[in-house]
Length: 218
Image (cartoon, rainbow, N blue to C red; front, top):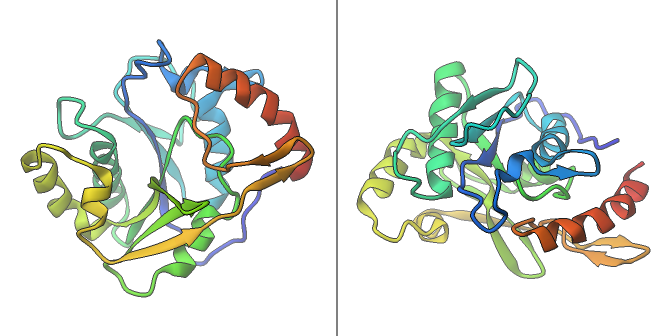
């Protein structure tokens, strides 16, 4: 059972599943891991950490999600990258809550991220304009982040005018709170909690690791 410490001001959660999944050969959100779709693993892990969540997807796959989970595509056309999903999440959150200040994003291909991800990102923020970003072993994981919704207009302009659209490039324009997360220590050795599944070989690795992590989190 994955759980998180409750917070009085949880952000909205957004699962980023808007990519083309070209290396996997099919929609990664619908790929089966441990007998259920990958996106379900991510939703179950993120839901206790947020005040409701949604999924950004540009695919036509039937994800078979709970009715309360909205699914929406990018607001900027052309598959311009994960920051388009972040923007869509900001716009969706602002439309559905007058008081929402941040959205927490995670990608759909990373099923082992920490159950205290959002709480630790929130705790690291010291000013409203700050973006909180996850790290492990000194490596930034830029789409595991807490984003101020107030940045939406700036982000949209950046997506429409910046040719490279590097996630780090946008992050580095703002104050950043860096939060380092430890490896998951298992009987089979350490596992990076931000391990992502891009290929069928990665999926095989995740299948081997899943019972090791479930044993720790029971």
